[in-house]
Length: 387
Image (cartoon, rainbow, N blue to C red):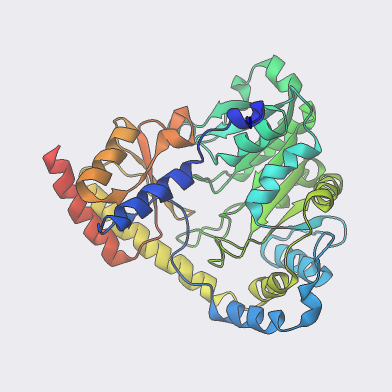
């Protein structure tokens, strides 16, 4: 009789898959659903990138196994991009490894350094894959609450010393999902100092680095002195260029950490389709006007949603980055989300799904157009008045 492993039994239901299941069920029942749930861009991939992909896929040479760290020309494009926009020097041959999306790299990295019983330091609320990767690698996730009173930054001073001594990885994600918080340079310097002192690897999830508002570009982790000594950054084309379905990202930073991840990948997958890597060169090396236009669209959506929620008497913390809004609803997050779903056919993500400290909050993804946001506010007003 088949029985799942003990590691598998420890995994929770994947939050976003459950949300999408509910969305599809409601649509199948004939309801019109406005979903602020899963963070999947509704905007199309820019045409210049699609054209690059179409041209690349016609070349038979890219139809073979794409072994190794990734195409040299794509890795050079990544390095050039970091130098141009963040003043970060990366060696394309030693400090960059192409991934099948950032999620894959985040999930697999713990297998490179975690032994049974080792601890990882995981921010919560946070992206569920930090815990999932740790558990599957045989490690133990230690949850670090990130709370509004501390600007949604982990307070490293509150981690018990016996936990610090066994910790192998510290996960950080700024701009942050789900809170949309940003980390300033002083905080990141302090984290680097802490991790160097205790020999803890920093895995920095930078998936939302290019989604920012009001012209305030977030701090680049790898631009901070000492970051490359102790850290690996995971990045992606998914959010910046509306390419979530394309599955392409990269790891960069410390040479030994990147090499370890590349070695693991050589043993469990065969690399990222080369035509997508060629399209990735167009993403990074081409004009960035479409990215700037996308930021303007998200900022407009943010402003409309913030204005609407304020009219409904919510206290709103205006996001400066990501395409999320983290709303304190001052009540049970699952109850609030279920009421919106039942009464208004609106999907939001209950904060507790990202961790215990997310209780009392819900997350809105700005992945619906302005007219739908306005309609959702109208439906929310009616639903709230009926409670």
